[in-house]
Amino acid sequence: MTTELDLVIRGGRIATAADVFDADIGIRGGRIVALGHDLGAASEEIDATGKLVLPGGVDAHCHFDQPSSDGSVMADDFDSGPRSAAFGGTTTVIPFACQQKGQTLRAAVDDYHRRADGKSVIDYAFHLIVTDPTPQVLGQELPALIREGYTSFKIYTTYDDLKLNDRQIIEVLALAKREGALTMIHAENSDAIAWLTEALEQAGQTAPRFHADARPAIAEREATHRAISLAEIVDVPMLVVHVSGGEAMDQIAAARAKGLRVFAETCPQYILLTADDLDLDGFEGAKHICSPPPRDTASQQSVWRGLANGTFQVFSSDHAPFKFDSATGKKLCGDGASFTHVPNGIPGVETRLPLLFSEGVGKGRISLNQFVALTATNPARLYGLYPRKGTIAVGADADIAIWDAEREVTIRNELLHHNVDYTPYEGRTITGWPEIVLSRGKTVVRGERLYAESGRGQFLECGAPDTLI
Image (cartoon, rainbow, N blue to C red; front, top):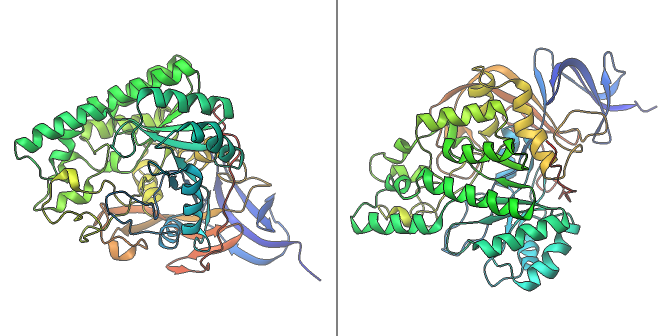
């Protein structure tokens, strides 16, 4: 005789983007099939008494094993990156299949699947990065890929090997409108950055701290305004990624007040780091070089307000894992190289959720429902994975993180599971950490132990973006 349920999680306090309630969760075949009290027997039970039971996180902006044109190598691949994500309570990741200029978009996707196949312990989807929107890409490849489940793509207004000009951006936005896809935009003014960078280098100001001077908030503000204007011309939704502070936020809030479907994402570095973290002894500040750079405490407060008032819909890690003490990482051009030659990005896929939980929910800056929305539900909706992912509801995948909201953890790199040799949050003590993480009803992480085998994660085809949030 077989039991009706594979697993029951009993006695926990469940939180979704809309509700907080006490109930048991019944799971069968990897999906949630019942929510209620005193559910029947199951093959396995988990006692969640006194714990929070949350949807597994959806990290909708992370980089794993992404090819580069400068010789840098990302430290995390599809084995170590998703494993690290799982230990931090994330059960779905969406990294980027990046087209190199001169390469077809289809070739980039095929290469990224080869890099990912048989490795991830959790489920994953792909965004695309469009760097070379040729007639073939716009007329054939991108429409076909959107129909195959790659329904979001990122474009850049900066970096010489990635950026598009305004005409190209309009053409990509118009295609997104025709095909029902969502465009993500990295918004910084490339020419302003180039001019400032040249002036700084001529003055011999090349230490890591000058990276922040080369990429000021006004360059982000201008490009954000321009991107919004182009999307308004086309009349299409878009999302501005990794917004760093109030100047760009003002543009986004004004657009939303007009009724434009403009969405925004921010990241842990913008609520916890400042430009001062680039000004450390020696070359240490290179650890915190990312774009846009962290700004100041006033910018941090602006971002917190935006997380609370709805300016931001998504909180992602932007995990960009370059080792510090490595000739293929931050020291690509040597110890002491100009900031212009330091690979951009910082790690954070494992610490994303605990940091926001501790600093946001724990300190009363955002509610528990907002935490779930920002880190799981909204990204699942915007990127076409909801309601399969991002919520606890009958019919959803049983992607669940059981949290000890009172657990105190001092972050040490040696305790993390990424393949990077540092964390920007070393020594920071936080409260709240996931202790059991399930993916499709199977325990992936319990305490410090990994239970899942490499390759159990499934590739997800994304549906149409939900831009009505």
